[in-house]
Image 1 (cartoon, rainbow, N blue to C red):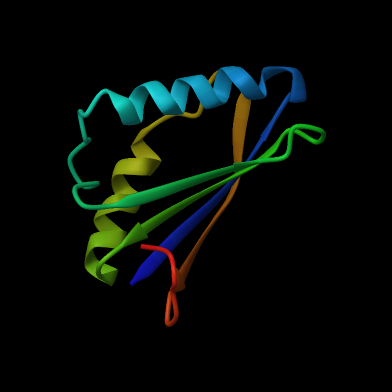
Image 2: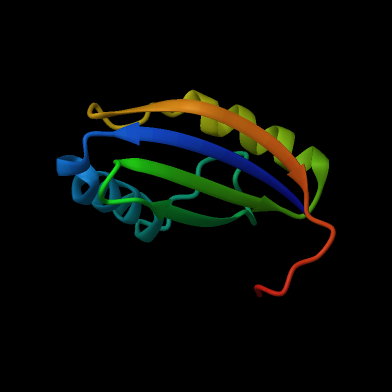
Length: 95
């Protein structure tokens, strides 16, 4: 398994808007090309406005395709992507 970890910075007052936007996209069921089969976690710190998006992929190739798809998406107007890193996930207990 592989993970793409992106960090974001938002105005803390707009965290609920960012959560709502992501939740709406996920619940729509319209998976963008390149993200088929990916799993996602969204972490937020309401005090600082920092967010972390962790997207899990079954293979390194799938992660690279997913990265292209995610890079083509723009964060909400009130947030900015501050970093993107890639990791192998050698141990996981989350199913």
